[in-house]
Length: 424
Ligand code: AMP
Image (cartoon, rainbow, N blue to C red; front, side, top):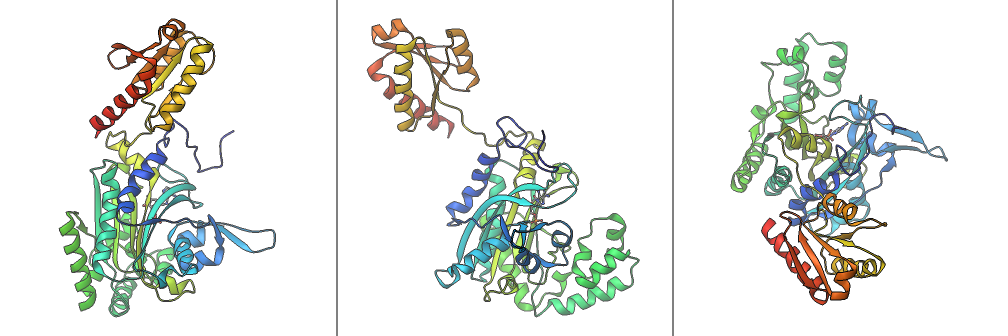
């Protein structure tokens, strides 16, 4: 029986089987930069998303999984991670401590979208948030960490698009100018409604017939006030210093008023229609929008499935779960007891090891050793045991060495450590 529409299973060898390894690899640069682990509930009050993501957005108006709990309170499966993590940080008063508050998170998000390649109803995101400061150097760090997340898994065809959405000083006048421009266009009812709620969102319409009409539209970057212009220049200088390439993206928008200044998206050209692999920006008004104090913030979220599809499009395997270094093949019950103890000692010492379970002959057990992906097989036969030795076989070239049992664990540990060093 398959899972619900728009979901998939993570299993070894399945399309997204490497999910956990990719997730950890992508978050590693943020961890090194001091972003600490955070987890907010998968379920939140519906109101949190209505206020924090915004009722005018497709996500809130059409895509949320919302239901009453047994007491009639409206709950929603989180469609994104920022609002919940921000709520949690504010509830805990982290913004009153050392700033910036730096957090990283990962987990499933839920949106009732039409499923297609790269678009699911339950999907996995990783994200970071930096709260409490408006320093453009912090913006540069956050954007750079997004870039580095993709570099960490080996992707080379990701493009970073960057712009500024202005602030309360310069955006209102721009918004008026854009509204005046949009009035003269032939837009369908849906776009007109969107233009009324937030004219900037019309710029984000991907349909060619809409894009064709937007050629001469005024763009925010041309209308930035002095402060916003300086902020953008400082972010760009920071990215230059960090060696992170970016493209100007004057049409890039985020739907809501509390998104301001730094805004960015990461796209991969090998993905077809769903080309966005991640995005983020500064959201200085969000904390207040969800009923909290004025706490500025900036963050991003990346989609893990699309990252893995991008890896496939680049012909890359991406990071993989490591197999055991050592696979022990015991022949007979005395050897089995010895194998169990050996594998236990190896694991305790940090060497990934496994053994052949079940009653298998040499041939079947060696096949299991091959399949495990291990580099070395240890064959423990009755005769070896009485001689006090074991045969250590290098599965890459078949070379076999005889090692005394009392030196076996140390010998294997040294081999495994040597391999780790070679891999680095
Ligand atoms: P957003 O929160 O909409 O900015 O999304 C951030 C990233 O999450 C996107 O760039 C995608 O990589 C990923 N994403 C968003 N929606 C979906 C979905 N329905 N299925 C898979 N990935 C998604």
